[in-house]
Length: 101
Image (cartoon, rainbow, N blue to C red):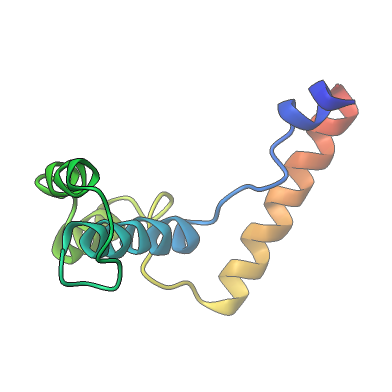
């Protein structure tokens, strides 16, 4: 039962969700790196690690470029109908995977 749950990915990510997750991670790293931010008691080593991670982290411009060049991977925003169709397709793939396992 556990193996089946691990093999099937019930939490498939849509391109707009992936885009928002990358941008949210950047905001989180920015807050951790900023000593005058919301969390003032973060250890110095963790702050330095966040700064290091942000050094080459994609900017908003980079993400927009990625969304234009690879819309199947990143999309800034999806039309509701497109989103609904993609969710349906993902559910169909999951069902097919469940049948083959």
